[in-house]
Image (cartoon, rainbow over all chains, first blue to last red; front, side, top):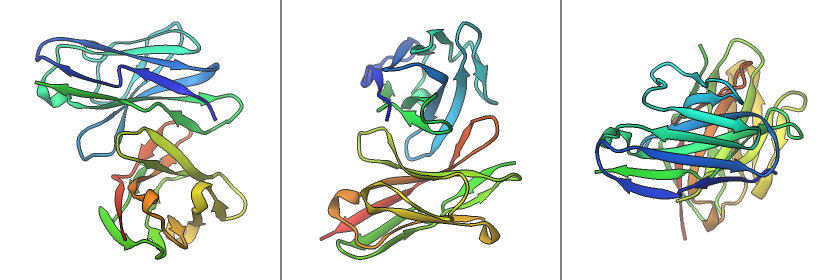
Length: 115
Length: 112
């Protein structure tokens, strides 16, 4: 299986600030995704991170709030902007790897608390 | 539209007992189905998957799942639960756009 590393693993932030989460994979991926898991809830897809172009956002998520970059095939960032307590969640990145086909592997997640 | 239902929010079983976690899906095409497990403070780990073929699939850690098209179900089973199986279990369906849709999860508690 592939290795997906996220950092930070957790953070506590103040309202109104922004946090950038990094996702690094150990081999090239065809697709990368960002998910949000709110407390006690399931995972919801935020967006598909596209290499070299704008991310594709799901309904309810916008680029101004969750800007995403993917400068190459092994790295992506998600920024949570102008945070409020409602943004307190676990944020996970995932990827499809060519060798596995149709299987998404997940990072360990970033636990964000906003005060 | 696709959806995944896990009707059991929380299940408690004794160590050594058998386990079945229920999952029902709604999807217009042939589904790709998955079970993931999330241990406390951890990310998601893939337990098993169903793409096609044999409807009984084997996964890691002694888990298996059976795809029943007529019931739109993909229930997860384990004949003998270990204390280390205590975790959150998520069923998911993948659409043609490679998006994963997750159920709300079932939290498993294992008692000695």
